[in-house]
Amino acid sequence: MAVEQFFNRRLYTIDDSSGRNIVAVTTPPAPAKSKNESTVGEQRTDKDADAQAADPYADIDVGTVVDVKGSVSSFRNEHQINIERMTVVKSTAQEVMLWEKRARFRREVLDVPWVLRDKDVRRCRRDAERSEAEAEKKKAKKQSRAKEVKSGSTKLPTRDSKSKSSRDDSVAKTVQKMIREGASTGKYNALGL
Image 1 (cartoon, rainbow, N blue to C red):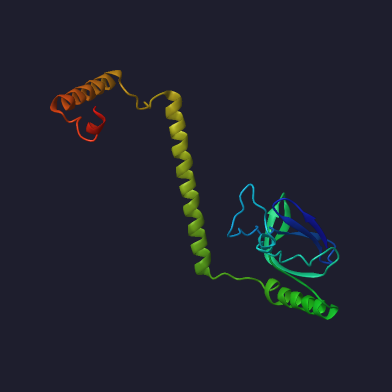
Image 2: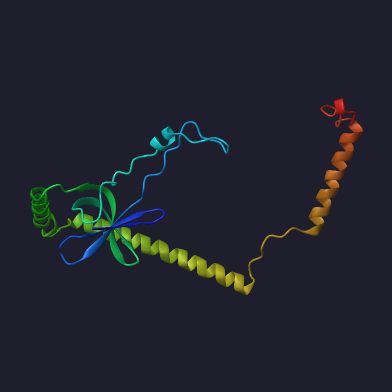
């Protein structure tokens, strides 16, 4: 095992004795916020350092034998494991038990042909055809919009200068009416306005 630390993740390169290595990825724990945040001039206490979350994989070092559980993902066309749980294998007996467990999983789950019922196959086909039809409709709609914009047949909504000036006139008339009727008095009376 090799360990690499980056800003936002830690990589463990693991050799599974099959001739290939795989990268296992984890994000380091975020520092815990202390209840009494220190300001610029204050000193931090040892209690603040203790408040940080402990690294669950701090005891794992180069050459350690580990058991990794996680989900498989891909980064730059290379498979990697997003670590959900990783434990240190303490003895060779425990390591042999892991080998047997892996062999049993392969024999009982992975090597058995997976069979879908006809009902499930039909449902999957129907869902796939429906999503293809929706994608085609969306594509056709996008193409028709592009053609309309190119040909100039669609008019974008614009403001007429007439409607703007008539609106300004109506606003001005409303303000004048309010002033004449004394509606402007009220909350500004105390200021003498």
